[in-house]
Image 1 (tube, rainbow, N blue to C red):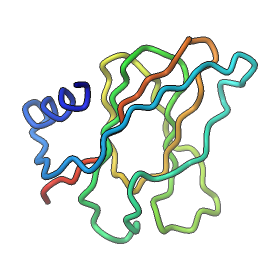
Image 2 (image 1 turned 90 degrees about the vertical axis):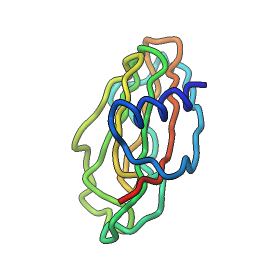
Image 3 (image 1 turned 120 degrees about the vertical axis):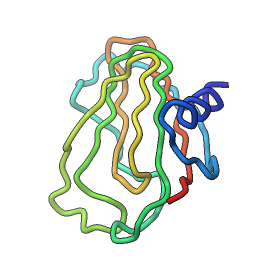
Length: 129
């Protein structure tokens, strides 16, 4: 129901021309009480579209609950040389927040340290150009 709610809101409120829902999944992470807030998981992309091709896929992350365990965004896209890859932005999970980015953008999650769980709905969408 969360994925449907997010897609409907993007169509109606953000005027996003969604063609297809490619994938929708829920991710739940549990706390790492002895972890470091600056630790993050393996950077990845949600779609293997080369950086030099006009991407028609976007990812919408919907944060189901308030939590620590930020999402990190990197300066690289799929197909680029990964040398000198570094964090360029991060987003904290706030209930109801949606963040949208190109699906070929490297990003990653991190486990909560203080919160009892971190729940995110990850939706990959094909949009009309």
